[in-house]
Amino acid sequence: MDARSGAGQARGRRHDSPSGSQGSFRGDHRGPPKQRPERGDAYYGALDLGTNNCRLLIAAPNPQGFVVVDAFSRIVRLGEGLSGSGALSEAAMKRTIEALRICANKLTWHRVGRRRLVATEACRMAGNGAEFIARVQDEVGLELEIIGREMEAKLAAVGAEPLMEAGAADALIFDIGGGSTELMWLDNRQGRPEIAAWVSLAAGVVTVSERFGGVDVDEGKYRAMREFLRPMIAEFAERVRRGMGGGLPAHLLGTSGTVTTIAGVQLGLRRYDRAKVDGCWLARDDIAKVCLTLQAMTYAERMDNACIGRDRADLVLAGCAILEEICHAFPTPRIRVADRGLREGILTLMMKSDGTYGTTPGGLA
Image (cartoon, rainbow, N blue to C red; front, side, top):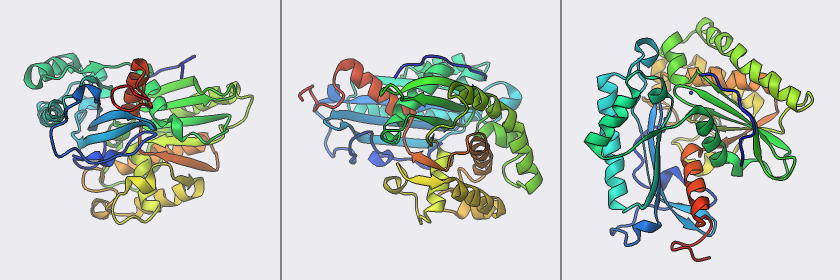
């Protein structure tokens, strides 16, 4: 997948996930081995430190692509208060360092050979972002890389692209993050998906909820969220329509905690189940109904919902507003849901670079 053009502006899962519950990419998943692995050089690690979440995947190549052997996800809210202060707070940095220590221990335990550890919008935007990265290396021993918006968009697209509908001429991939939202138009008319256009919007679930409030969200506040977001998304939508000769993408493909949460609620899950969510389809009308249902809930009711939980209860309505505006700008009948994204993109590109993607550990076909 190649990025052919871009237009940038200014970009959480629920609980710790110590086994392979975050899943895999064109492969299967399992829990961590009971014994210390002997072939850590065959393992790859991908870490995504965002505005809201710290997430790690450890995987090994297999004939289907790769298999996840361990995973971790914790909401750390690194970007809490950043939109107002311009800096990462000490409390947020301490929370994040605690989570990164767990990640470092997992990488050490599994003797991970190849790794890429990236930080996104919070560290890009914070005045002390580079200082925090240096602190992580000193205190935890992990070397994090602050990636640009175009790279973030590309990695998310690579991770989600396998869920693009077979034979579709194109698709609009979106990733609603904590500090920003990426939109990527994938053109598949030549039989090889390429990013034909992309944008990174300075609006994510954390930044929008901090701007408008996320605990008590009435109809007026929700409408204000959508009106704030509309011109940002509409500008990119117009550019995509011009590139397509006035048409719409074949379908939307969403990768984020927002879209997986809405899928879980729509499916009536009593607890979040990745196997039922990843790859499922949502009708546009059903998304609107779920968003209305969530707006009608109190904050306490959102906390009690198994697919939302305490950590996302004050963020989910901001995510709904972003999602509904994407659906408004790109009114396709349905959306495919991806519980995969940037980390899977990192793993895929590393393994393809090494020639190990789709092989057994050790590089055997």
